[in-house]
Length: 155
Image (cartoon, rainbow, N blue to C red; front, top):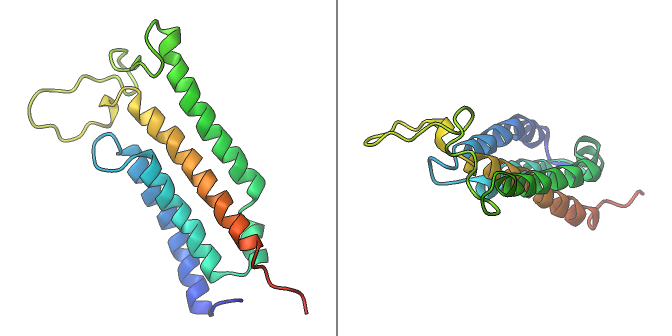
């Protein structure tokens, strides 16, 4: 069942905003409430918005199950590789090997009021990013499988 042109246009306009805001929640997850799961769920909400506004063929033409499964697997592998990085640096699994490394995500946190330096999270931003990608892929695949059960029959 197709929705009106206004609903479809609004969904098309809000879809990229859902993706960007979800990415924002993922990136700032170590500084603010939120993180990988919440950001991934916000990004998958953009997919749900398209599913409500468009027909089955329109949605599956834009968002492929295979690509979302690859997205899910990539997020999981990133999480595992970040965790195994601790073992390669002589720490425990998920040991924060980036905290004292300097450079990307290795800045020291200053004492007192902090405006929120994105590069202070150590391993946490990488874990958030992996979880965000995995949740986006997983929830989108679930939504697409649910949609495939109600696709319209050809008349």
